[in-house]
Image 1 (spheres, rainbow, N blue to C red):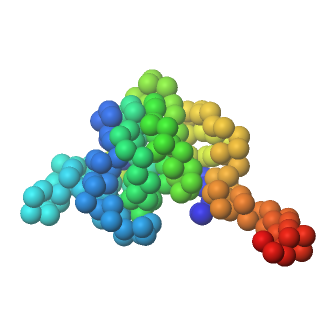
Image 2 (cartoon, one colour):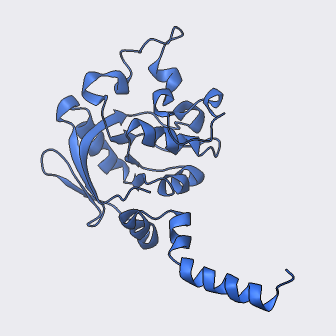
Length: 201
């Protein structure tokens, strides 16, 4: 998993509450178990019309935000079903950080397992960051995980809280598999001893 340390990037505003996982990646694209290739379908029903053409007014179709890596979203982002394809689609598009006042629990947990930093901020701070994100090509903000702060284009700073264990995992690029592999030697020793003690097993 890719490490997350510090990210300076364009932030796209999505001031919509209760964006569910079906809006993030519609059900017809859940047939794959690959983590790649889903970015083109991110927010499919919002990004494209019935003929598959770009909807010009959708934020990620605007020239200033086509390469956005940060999403500033409304309350309760990622609600709905538990599909892990939602963070896969965000990551494949290029989104490494989502900022909101609140997230659905399963989506929130899935983000950390895929190298995406979901940040919870107060409603007032979200308003400030949404204003920053509305600046188009000038909507560049810096997310500093080590210091747990977000710096806006005018130098304003928003601090955020994060569980220390989750922070460490992102800084070191560790998902659950990576954490387990840190104990690979101990696991191998145990398996060898178990096989010797119970050769019939």
